[in-house]
Every structure is written in structure tokens, then in C-alpha cells.
Length: 157
Image 1 (spheres, rainbow, N blue to C red):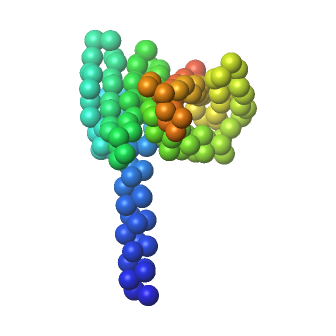
Image 2 (image 1 turned 180 degrees about the horizontal axis):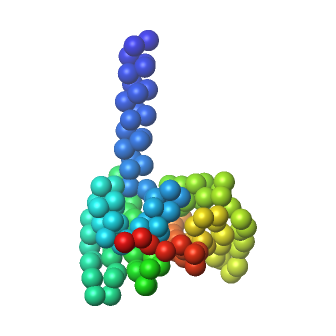
């Protein structure tokens, strides 16, 4: 019995670490409400590497390669005190996590020309487009998730 408990705890711990690089509703909310400089520390702690940092234009790009060869690329752009987030990923769990974590805060959702849109309380709008991978693989998709913060959400300094 002890062995089964140990194996169960080991697998649950490993699955927890595999979720480390994924971004949820709370993570998005944190990023939108804080200065772009806080994103560096926050995302590096989640395992991302900074691939582009331009202080003049206030653009940042972060990347993480996860188990199985999937990856997340997060682009942040500060426009005045507002922050815009784009997540490009081929990790289906990232797509599912965003959809599931915002579901309890949903104001409305819709679908227009292959783009899923969600209006989310205390966050703004999320637009998700799904395309086939190049080269084509029926089991894989590319997900482009764009988050536009509500006009009342500004980043603190």
C-alpha cells in the first residue's frame, strides 16, 4: 500500500511540474496589472527565457520549450500604461488552461470566422485562433491567444 501511495504522489508531483510553464487567468491578470518589468521576474521564475527585450519600444518576448517538444512564446507590449499579451503555442494544455480558467469569470463568448472570443470579468477580451501546423499533423494545432486588457486596467509602476 505504501508503494502505491508513493507512486501516486510521485506522478502527481511530476504532473504539477509539467504545468509550471502554462499561463492561467490569474497569471494573465497579474501581468496586465503590473509594470512590464515585473513580467521579466515572473516569467523567468515560471521557466521562460527572455528572447527579445527592447526597452525603447517596451516590447518583450519570452519562450519556453516543454516536455514533448511543445513550446509557448509570450509577447508583451506596453502602450502607455496598458499591456497587451499574445501567447503563441502548440501546447494543447495551454489552450485548455486558458479556456477553463476564464470560464468562471466569463461575461460572454462567441465565435466569428474561426476566432473564439471571450469577454472576461476583471480582465478584458481574449481572442483565440487555431490553425493547422506546418507541416500538417492531424494531432497538432497552433494556437494564437491574444489578450486585450479592459480599458480600465492599467499597469502599476
